[in-house]
Amino acid sequence: MIVGIILSAGESKRMGTPKQLLPWGKSIILQQVIDNTSASRLGKVLLVLGYRADDIAGKISLSSKTSVVVNHDFKTGMSSSVKCGISHTPADADAFMLLLGDQPFIGSDIINQLIDCYQTGKHGIIVPVYGGQRGHPVIFDSHYKQELLAISDQGAKEVTERHNRDIVEVYVDSDDVLADIDTPQDYENVKGQAESPQKKDR
Image (tube, helix red, strand yellow):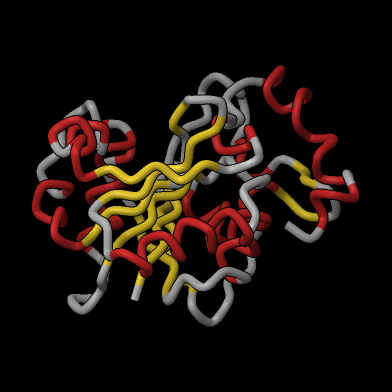
């Protein structure tokens, strides 16, 4: 089983308002991320909340395979959310997929493409690549669990740099894997994708 971990505990300081709750088509950004993971072949999904956790949790709907965990140390950065999510995964998890809560345009097709690569060869680390650049989401085999639980401020990047030879790059046909939504301008640049016909079923 591959467990998806949605990292969505941050304070959205550069946005000025919780970006998880910004409109995305007929939904909101975080709900779209949840829906995309729910439609994928991930076996279980953990949503890591932190800042305004109760408020955000009250505005989303969870699928039967999705549950919420709260990172009370969210002010220390994303690394704490990675560790929070990893620490709550089932003992029998084969691997973990780290997803960003501000990438509503990462559809189940991309998620499943990465899962297929992992399951085909049981590779250590699976990373999507577009235009020669590595993006998100990333799959880590459970072999790296203890290392992920010990990361510092540099985040999961510590593990990928330490095990660069274990990385398998999956080339995707969309630059969505490189983008996230941190600022109002970022949001303006991508929110049209929510209504784009080629994005609706992704």
